[in-house]
Length: 614
Image (cartoon, rainbow, N blue to C red):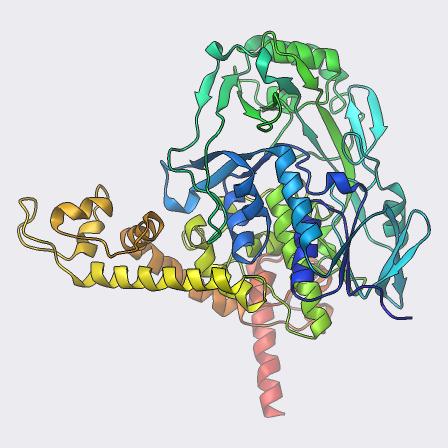
């Protein structure tokens, strides 16, 4: 029987959309199945993109040719660059978005894409033949055949919504869970575990007392996520800051057992770095208050997201908590908070290409791998889409290294270390974060995106023009000298002046420097960062070269680690299960110690010597 499609994607969230678009744009006949077409690209939790490390991921996805950053810019209503007071490695763009408009833009992107078939259907079964995926089956019994399937099911696998002592099956509020698919995955031998996440209440912004809230306006010079697409960014709303009070905390302590989490109803593990308000009060008893941000949900609604009080307490307690917070004393709750528990597949089942180890042709992306966050999901989605199509072509797969992209850090962490809580990206997870800045994602990844056919010729040409301008400006800064100035004993090269911590690119004009025509604020900032941090960057490059030496020492899948007796038994078990691609990955496996990798290196050298002598 001929294939109906080349690639089937199940799930229309951030992971599924990026996977389907990447697949179709690379020429594969692609199908995207969603439970409800109207929910395509829905921002289930906070309508925002970016933030620490997440902003890096959003820009990397865009540089590879993805859609998340572009539509975040187009639907953005409030933009801020976070952590400007710290080093450039941790600067992070963030946007508050119009929830409904973002979803509409994503639906339009999918529907307008050539070669991409969108269909509303509940997929209940994988069709597997001879250990390889061969398609999917829907809830009405229809089979769709394809040699590659990408599962991007989010929180829908056996999803259960909890509010107080009430539990309702659901993938998110108002949408059914995917119980049959969960059972099918178990029957196929895939190990499922349970995680939980949650949302806060939403309030009517007209019912707030703004005199008691601290306004958080957007930046005067807003920056977004997408390169070379001419989106005009504007701040159209403000966010607002307030804090919980001792009364808030006492309310929570008195009603703790009414919470689904502390009442013993929820068994899944929640995100440590985005905890419920109950968790904050219990785990940080010394804290008298916690920040609460009021964030508008869009331009055509009065609904506001109360960021910081995610909870699974009963509705009446939720309202008391809201009213105990300054500025929210008379707030009208429009949606109550809830927690959601769902199945995910142990990411140890993944190969670095996002392909499932035990079922050939099956790829997994997003929260099904134990991650949290739109950006983490979208990053996995675009990589799954790329690698599914590369495998169809018989081409080498794309695996980004930890020294190349935050996407590489994310996937390597999942594959190598697994996760015992919903995984969230942080800049601290990246060893080479000074090289992996948010401002140079295009320089790091756009050549790849263009080579894969995901970046348009027009964007590529503009990128090349920017690089040429930047290189010329750096050459001028390093070769030209300043005019005589009272601050200087003698004229100095502009690059040397720019190394001064208190001197900016713009301030070089007082020493006689005139920027070249066409040099934008972005190019000027890139030049300034490269010159100011040159010493640190050189050291990071040297560390990266040493890292690459270990990464380049390949380990073949057919190595039987059980036979290497100089390696500890626990390490042999881990190495056999994970099958690391190289020595660098082997070093990062929990339970594999330095002595184990040293023994492995000695064994490899003996093997190489024997092969040469043979």
